[in-house]
Length: 129
Image (cartoon, rainbow, N blue to C red):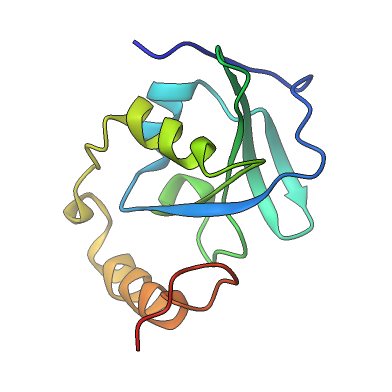
């Protein structure tokens, strides 16, 4: 089991985007990492987990500019000082995503459109030719 701390005292200043988590429910994140470290209207996000792993790797999980309420979101951004942050988040989740059919039907189409519109729009995200 990978050990980590979820705390407002984790120094996340200077972290940046390292990857995405797709088709992961809010409930799955709460089950795995605990309640979000921060909740509320914070500029372009509404929830954020601030995590420090036992090896000192710092990671954040947040809902960047999503049109969904956090409890309905299934696309998350991972931040950190290195790509190891994304790797450790995925390992901790054991990359066993919840199913899309848990979303209400009217939100599935909207969510799929959102994924299509943003799939390769993030700086640093690998682009397909």
